[in-house]
Picture 1 (cartoon, one colour):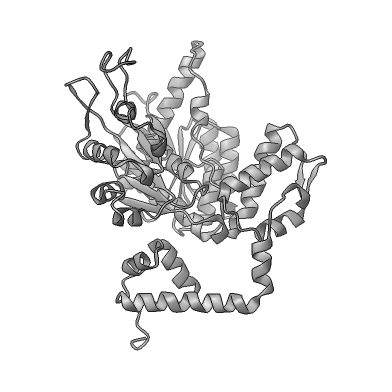
Picture 2 (cartoon, one colour):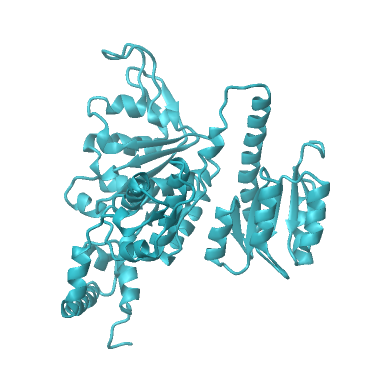
Length: 465
């Protein structure tokens, strides 16, 4: 590979030893590296060379790394950026990802970690280059392919930042199946897409399937495909979901509502990664990752013999639970601002503002429909709004439940003490095994951990504390 064809990498970090060691690691590889220890040196290199990838320390002396990121993405929109940080400041990391950073690594990291991150980025760069070349030849390929990679992640609460960190971990292990749980409307499919598009599978298909909506008579054809003439109506060969997702991700929504017949077939295909089309005898090998989601307590479904335990074990390699919006009210304001920006632009009302009363009202609302409900409320409000100011009358939510609880402080205190006592008693009964206690209480282990933290409950028996 000639120097011209190599991926050009700029390492911008104030630690000279770090930049030298990392640059030495790149020598003799498919990359050409440049070193800079100050923002001024970095800007000069960016001006003199067509850099493909910037490895940027988010904390530099005398300058904010986020400001450098903004400037770089503005002046070099096609350049990809991997941020590195020794401080593990997830709030800063989230801001960087929103500003267009492709990935992040926490110091100290192994060379293999940066290698994997760059390989993901390199593939994305190559995809962009191919798209550009095809566009220059008046190709019919649409630039909307890039727009499908939605890296925006809205939220500031510790709970949702933890979800985002878990999603990044899942993206780094592209062969591990992921189970996402949470109430309806919390954004399970959005998290699944983030995992897919941050992984090395992002150049292949992300196929979302509603498991409960597939006709029982057609489920085999939908998942495994069929040969022409294999049944009435099979007028041509058809690829099934497993085959379509070769190299990519199959997202199975509402997994708990899947029929037992389909569960058995999914289990076998997931274990063997080999499928056979209906009406055919030739096996087809396919490589896919399954991300599944449910708003049910799937362990209860297993107990009732409505979901296979062996399939749950196969799908639940990594588990991500998304808390309800009412459990993370800090996210309501940034989500509302984001949705207002989106729909104001969509409906050509760019000068809209939000009254502070709106935030006060929505913070008291339970949001049974979670983020989806907030988005729908915002869209409706902007459509019907008669002025440039969104007010409380534009968000007709019912607060009777919240108001009644606030009026009865004694009831609220008693309810809290009852919950605390129930958690403590259950932990004691289960010998302080958190998973067993969570199962007994009928909640997820993550939810139990949050409640224990909220009420300052430890897993150490009181007589030993």
